[in-house]
Length: 78
Image 1 (cartoon, helix red, strand yellow):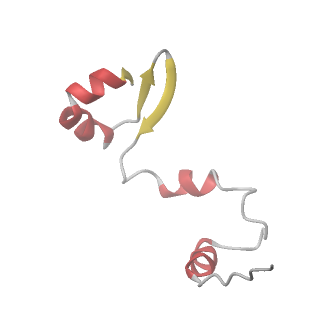
Image 2 (cartoon, rainbow, N blue to C red):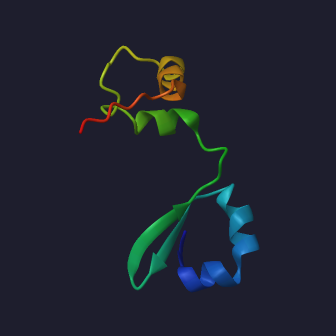
């Protein structure tokens, strides 16, 4: 579904409930600027979009999550 930013602003509650059922593309000044989608989206589809981003092809979702949650240490050089 395509809607304008003004339409979204004026009917936000309606579009929030619709987002659970279908993706909503928001258009501003004739350009697509955002996508409103339900949180219960297909997890497999989301992980498929990450193919190629994770450098180690043997990494699974749980392993990637653990690595993401590890503290990051920064080394500053002067």
